[in-house]
Amino acid sequence: MKGLTWKHGLLTVGAFVLVWIAVQSTGVAPGLALKSFVEGSVGGPAAWRQTLREMTPLLVTGTAVFLALRAGLFNIGADGQLVVGACTATAVAMRVPGLAGIVAGCAAAVVAGAVWASPAAWIKAYKGGHEVISTIMLNNIAGFLTVWLVTGPMKDPSQQSPTTKLIDKGSFIPSVVDQPPFRMNLALIMGLIVVALLAVFLKKTVSGFEVAATGANPTAAKAAGVDVRRVTVWAMAVSGGLAGLAGAFLSLGFEHRFYADFSPGYGFDGLGVALLAGGSPWGLVPASFLFAVISAGTSSVDLLGVPKGMNGILLGLIIIVFATVRYRRAGVAVD
Image 1 (cartoon, rainbow, N blue to C red):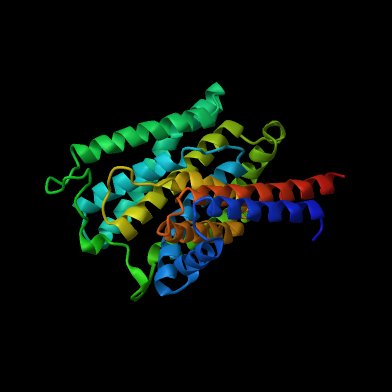
Image 2: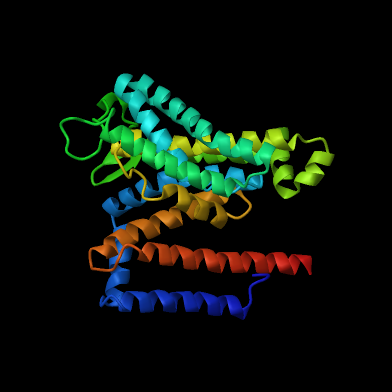
């Protein structure tokens, strides 16, 4: 492949060696860990069910971050927007049962995520404040706020742990395939539709062109008549809305309630998914699947005594190798 050199092969081999050393240091045979990894991620119907479950929020948060990146924004706040969206969707579904609860819950989650991202967008567009700082702060506020809600006003009094009541079964996002132990939730299909809509938006619409132009060169975009401030606010708000939708999918499709520490970091992993996707929104599908395989596989390996933190090592190495190859190609193109 053009742009690939022996150095990239060496870098990939080095990454595998680092993982091997890390696993060996835990006292678990790397061969046994690899076998458990494969069995836990793609080794059977139950493993596939878990992998597709993990893929759903990663796909949608990746879409959210991807859109922001195309507008030149680093939406580090996707995790907070997801949490706020999940909490809002749960609150709505607890009061509106049935299909209406699903629709209203998802819509409310989108609005909540967009509202939560808007202050960072406004600060970026009109005051020049960096969105990374403001979204990180909003993540913390979202965490404190939702924990307070599930330990106080929204807490299920019959439970010791900080959690809400289960939502009505009629408000569960249903499965499109349900043949135990395999199951695939409709939320994943909805996530794929979101990716398709984003691809059409970016490729076929004037607004999509304005987003890309703003992200590529805001000065040139402004000279061409694009309202850069409006695009910045709009793109970040929509990005937040998509992250909120990911929270609704997680709450209504899988957990069926909201609780403290709801997200293990799906919003942050969404940044990795978006970076790994490269320049095409369709790349979000394989990227989120890869992240999901690693998440499900390392959960299985964790049972052998290998820390779950191996997940972060694997993902970090993959992103480093990918970024090196990508920027090498960019350098070749420039040369």
